[in-house]
Every structure is written in structure tokens, then in C-alpha cells.
Amino acid sequence: MQRNVSAHLELDIRGNTNMVFSLSAALGANIASENLDFILDGVKLDSRELHDIHGTRLHHFVSGAGRMIVDYNAQIDGRAEPVPTDEIDLITYLRPSRYCQSDSLAPTARSEFWGLTGHVLVRAIVDWVFNRLRYTSGSSLPTDGATRTLLNREGVCRDFAHVTIAMLRAMEVPARMVAVYAPGLSPMDFHAVVEAWVDGEWWVVDATRLAPRQSLLRISTGRDAADTAWLTSNWTDLAVMSMLVTVAADSLPYDDGYELVQLG
Image 1 (spheres, rainbow, N blue to C red):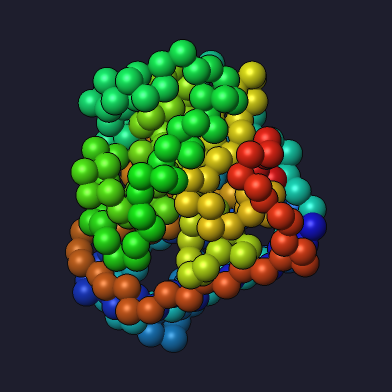
Image 2: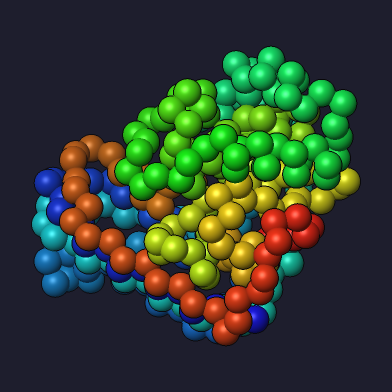
């Protein structure tokens, strides 16, 4: 499988800003070609690449004020091997987190899914989230977590992922969020999905059902949206003036939503 991905961003930066971008395909991807540029008022900036424990590639630098253009493009040939997992991961991804309040939602999860285990449980939770939430662009705030999303009954991909993760953790299934490039996604954007730990492996699920899981490309992995944001900035305000994400694959597989799929 060949996938071509790109992201074009234009930012208005008000002053000196500490910036960390997460746009690149994660370590382990079979990258045939790749380019990432940060240009501030016509001047190219240098960045320092950092890696987290899951192979997320972070690009860090300090920018001054001005108009920044960010361009990323890559060609990926073939699928990556599964990301290694250790015992600490299985502890971390069972705990409640900022946007995945599994402790608050435990009574609901136990009422709905009591007695189910393994892949049957995971599928039941994904179906439950799909049937109870409506995908509505612009319907949620960046600070919304799983509990508020359930009250509102609508959200975008990050909200679907947060509710899915919270329910899985409440039922003792380690679960984590993954930001991905998603061929076939409409409307096209960065996308968020979930990995659930079952039978000693991470399996990808997506309660939005908006793109085939077999062709997803990992960008970043973490507890929730706090760990997987495409940009983290400090010190001063900035505004995203425009964003264009394009993703294509040489073929789009059919995804019935129930096949066992691993991210590659």
C-alpha cells in the first residue's frame, strides 16, 4: 500500500512562542520521501526532532512574531510494524485521564456492558458510541471531555475517541488515542481513532466509521487529545489562519467495522 500525505498550515503568531508540532508520520513508517518546512515571514526556521516512547516525532523550536507557513508532505510505502508495548503502557492506559473520565463513566459502562469481554466487548462499545453520538463539525470545544460529549450527544472524531476510550477503560480494557492521517476521510482533516488492548495486541477501532482503518497512518499516540495535538504552543497567542490536509492511498480497502485491524 502506498499513501501520500500532506499538511499546509498558515499561522499568525503574535510574539515569541515556544512551539512543538506533531505532523510527521511516526517512527516505524516506511517513508520513501518526506519534507517538513517551517517558514516565518519568508525565512526558513530550523527545528529539533524529538521522539516519545511510542515513536511520535515532535518538532520543537522557538518562533518570533509573524506569519508562519508550515508544509509537510510524505510518501509512505507499505505498512509499519506494531508499536512495542510494555507493562507501564498497560497501567497508564487503564487510568482516567483529562479527557477520558473513565472513573465518572464507570457506572454507565458497567450497566451497559456487564458480562462482555474481549473483542465482543470492544465491538459492543464501538457500536454503542456510534449509535449514541452524532458527528457534527464544530459542535464541541477543545476542552470537552467524554462526560460532556455524552451529555451533548454530538462531537467530532476526538470526542468519539474520548468516549470510546473512557468506556473501554471503565471495563478494564487498556485504551489509547492515536492521531492519524486517514485516506478516504470526508471531510478531510487530521483524524483521531482508538487502540484497544485485547489478547496481547493493540487493535484499532473507530466509532465514527468515516475512513477505512486498514489504510490509517499513525502520527502520534497518547492518553487522549492532550498527548496527540498537532501543535502545542506556549508564551503568547497565535491564530490558525488556514489548514489544508490531503491524504491519498493507491487503494481504499472496504472496512465493515468488525474486522480485527492493527495500525500500520
